[in-house]
Image (cartoon, rainbow, N blue to C red; front, side):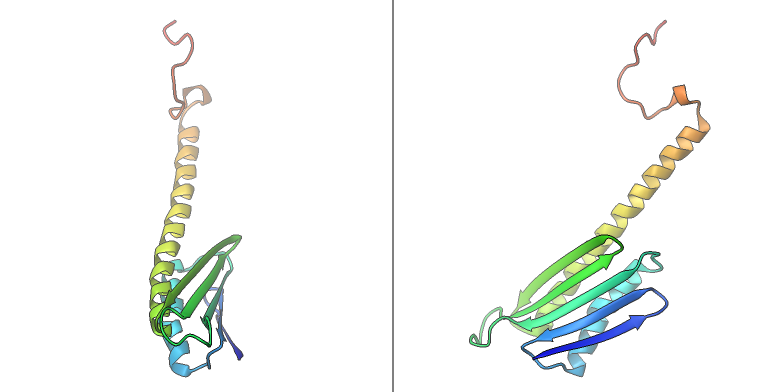
Length: 149
């Protein structure tokens, strides 16, 4: 059994798909995914200029086993050219969704902080280059030859 649900948030350029394998689609499950995964990621990413697409796969690993970690939630999040993949298993499908949501929040925050720090680093370097003469750059490391002459 395969079911796909596709929705768009028009204000954030975020498309998301919920795909279920070996389990029926239920309204409670889709609302749970929207509440625990989609909404927090939408808030964290905010008004990102890049296109964002999210694919959530909910599946039961095997039909034979009845106990153990047989429920899996997979998450593929593409932000522009970057891809974040998360896979978590649990004894209940809602537990797997909770674990996947927690990991997704951590990874997206780390990605966002990394991109912001890179942008700030480049901006600081540009300001230094604008303020000083090219020969007086302050981010050069090591000793300069003939500096005492």
